[in-house]
Length: 112
Image (cartoon, rainbow, N blue to C red; front, side, top):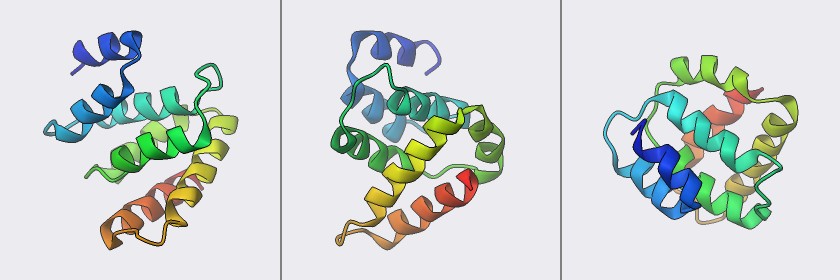
């Protein structure tokens, strides 16, 4: 994953990045946070809807929230605030699965 994902980021194929992250076993939390960093950085002119679509699947992955708590401190404040906003958009979905809601709330807790 450490060799494959940078190539996918360079090619701009975020659908493939999401697929690799969500279908691989035991994805390291630092790679998940690299993805969150990529999605929330201003230099990648994604729309809010695009960000929500990409994040929805990745935030729903089974992760160690203890490890993620240490990793999430890498995000600058502006990106953390954007991530909060995006997670709130995900939570507004009326067709949200209970597990997705629970995991999204855990992410909110980590950021706050």
